[in-house]
Length: 120
Image (cartoon, rainbow, N blue to C red; front, side):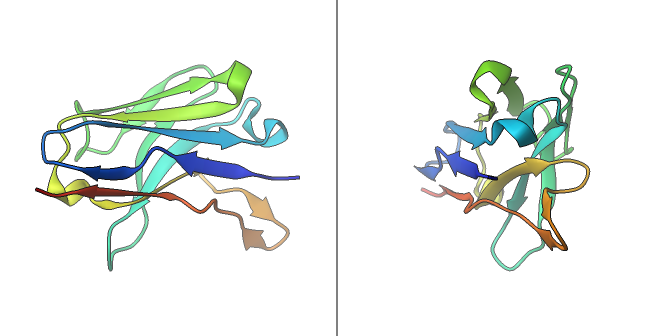
């Protein structure tokens, strides 16, 4: 059975911080290249940060130096620490495999996401 559960979003003022968590089924997470994606209102999904099974990370230019992705293999969990948040970071944040998301047959599988709103 597949599950992906994101949490940790909320409303934060510009300059604030949030830490997102994503728990993934063990059969999916083990050894997987994982990523955080986000979808701003009215915009397409974008990859924000990724982490290999060995811990190597990569970031979108827009979040470089502000966001940090990490993983805890014992907990099947990937995290996204977000600092110095900006209004343009407002989006629904999802985690999934990279470079291609989890597939169930012909369909892509996504969790429910977690809403991050940066506003004063």
